[in-house]
Image (cartoon, rainbow, N blue to C red; front, side, top):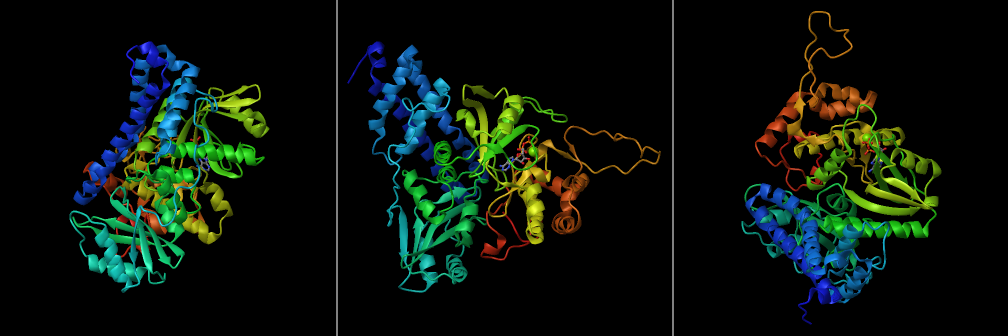
Length: 584
Ligand SMILES: Nc1ncnc2c1ncn2[C@@H]1O[C@H](COP(=O)(O)OP(=O)(O)O)[C@@H](O)[C@H]1O
Ligand SMILES: [Mg+2]
């Protein structure tokens, strides 16, 4: 079908729909290019290259949507914003993507166009793909996208050696036989007759991860092999064999992997067989399809509301000064709306708050910064809100929350995984669990410092505890890079009698930070304070912070391991940032 007359093309949905598909294809092609660089970066130890690409790829989606919109605008003119155009486009687009291995991502891509143009409140099923065309699991064992190594013909070490041979890297392995032997030793408690691994290697930061299962007949055990390149040659750094441990590597508090796949749903379904508790949305995020992860989160929210009587309530913990935070008791997510006004002493603006969330999105999240999804124009029935919460939202978030008839419209909010706020957790946990949490709180500060982040408002209430007992930060409005901070020692009191002065007699700049004062902020006492000091006393002095600043200024990319050092194959020299041998 060829038309030259633009009026005719405007009424030709198939041509316009193919423009959207072209934009989608160009997004996927550019994404594939970036992902293809992950392997050479790893092989050459080009960690700055990894960092740049990890941030760059996050912008590819919106870029492709913008380009596609521009082409559509050129072609359709005013018809672009006619509701009817999009019903036609949707009908024309559906057959174009049917049968694609990534059809669900292509649907989400289409929805991004309509949402951008129409600011739809809620969802419009005529213009958008609401429920997926095909929601049946697409992974079936045995999966063609895996390699399988038979382990019945020889010792386990030989099978692991075959695994390493199957995943080649340009500089080669430093000690493949030694690593294979150590892998066999570390997995000795798990009987297996075959090793299966996804062909796609998961790259992130300074690590490369092989993910799959050990089989004993039909009994499956999760398997994750972590590779590093510390010396210029590749080595096996760690091995994990439980769903919980693997799940921590795939955490919502870490940046998304660079992993090459033409079949996202198959890959995600495969990962679900390894980490059955992880929500579909988080797995899509983890493999880098975060817009579709958001679609899946929204769908699971609608499903939850449709199948329960759950009502939105204020989230447990201390009330935020910047954010109004609420949740559904039966759904593991918090909803955060920026308040109209911030109480003293908060001086940030709405724009700055949003910029901080954007900065976190692009930064290495180090396993310590919760992932946030940004939503616009959500609508819920009024009777789903606890009345006290609704009153609070309508009065303190009136710029973003409106009541229209019986519908609550929220023009902007963030969602995050719900954690147990640390202040609440410490009140209810056993003494041992509380001590562990306080020690991990210090490790979280160190991990953040290792990625050049100072959390700003480091009070206990701004950290949450995950299902795995990991400490994760969620209050971003004062977060900054270490370079933006000036870590200072408290000056010794002057001789001349100012000690009683109510205000500091020395100049305190906006970014001046006195680590000695952290002790007061923490509000810890007794055993918990002792546990913190035993592991992290150096965080209360300036030297630690100055050293971190120097390392970052020198362009060092520091190691953060997403597993405990007990899982590492080689004993490691003690590093200052994991004093107790626990890391990541
Ligand atoms: N991801 C989360 N999980 C559980 N509770 C949360 C989460 N994020 C925030 N909260 C709760 O909401 C409160 C306010 O949120 P926060 O992000 O700290 O905003 P503010 O900048 O207004 O303090 C927190 O003190 C905590 O109790
Ligand atoms: Mg807070």
